[in-house]
Amino acid sequence: MDENNAIAVAADLAHLLKDQDRLKTIISSHHTVFFNVLCNEMKRALRYFLAKAESGYELRDTTDTPHFYHVAMLKELHRVAKTGEIYTYHFTILRSIMEKTATFHGFSCLGEIIKREPNDEDGELHARYVNLLSHGNHSLFEPVDMMEENKRIFRKILNNLMNNYRFNPKLFP
Image (spheres, one colour):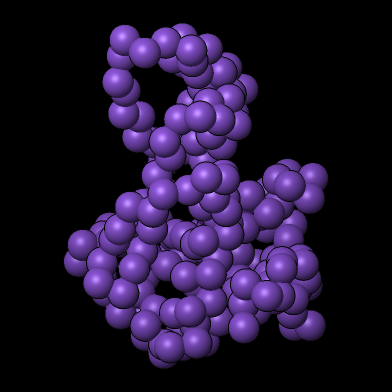
């Protein structure tokens, strides 16, 4: 669903469910805008957010709209960059965050926000890494550790993104 349809469907669904006690409904979504609109429209409804915990995943009750998914994923990328537990699928998450950041800042593609290296005026090297390593048969359920050179480049791209686009520093100690 594109953003406009996500908003429209969430608002219509909330309108149908509000102020009625006949139906008990569970709605599950990975679409952050859809979830956000539902939370804002259905103030009295019970809301849970699936969050990563030390022992796996847990449902957390939230009385407020939780942080957007991309901020939670950015925190996870920050963590793996520090620990070295970087797998190939992390480039897919990084690409998604970069696309959202580029869109938010008014750029037409993620390549426009990649920091250019002095010997790489077009930013082609890092753009190629992001494009190449974010596509392929990388499974979350069968993670593949990256080579040290790819980990180094991953950290560099992530650090450049975080240094060039301001994110709340309290979230990234």
